[in-house]
Amino acid sequence: MHLGIDLDNTILDATTAHLHYYNMESAQKFLPEDVTDFYIYRIYGWDNLERDRVYHLYGHDIHWNSSPLPRAIEELHLLYNEHTISFVTARPHIFRNVTLDWLKHHNIKYHNIIFTEDKLRECNKLDVDLLIDDAPHYAEEFSRSNKPVILYDQPYNRNVNNEFVFRANNWSEVVKHINDIERFAKKSGCVI
Image 1 (tube, rainbow, N blue to C red):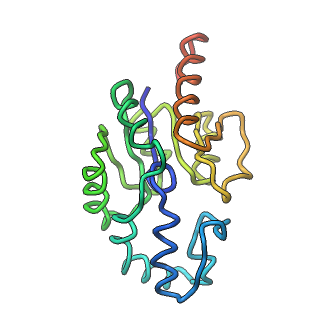
Image 2: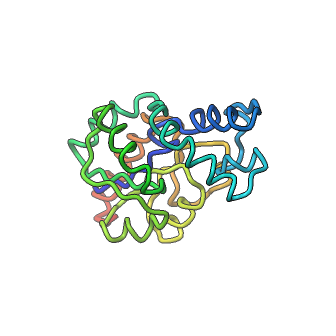
């Protein structure tokens, strides 16, 4: 199968890194459990201009200092040998180099990487069979297109429910869902 995989809060903990730098900039003390909105900057009361200023100031450090989620790297190594891996991230192009360096630093193999906010269009171009993401809006968009989504569980995406959405709390569950979806497709003769 061709897997489209998000980076932030899917293979790595972006929330903690964002909070560290955003707290430093704002003199606030928000914790990961305070984040109930996909758009973290909203808890700070920032508008888009302030968000962009702070993100561009600290973005490199945020992306470099994000820690891999437990078992993500090990499971990605195994998946790489059996599937096509395309990372599909909404990160701006200005953070392309730090993103590629982070992946190389963690020895994460992949076949493609795309920087886009229009994930459905790009995944359709690449013939991605399955998306793994944390963003509620991408999960809803994919599921409306009858494409399976493994939604990496976060407080801000818990209202997403659809027969094409499979929720995972960790990377062992992600792999189990991939195997189940692949097995079902083969058994039923479905093309994913």
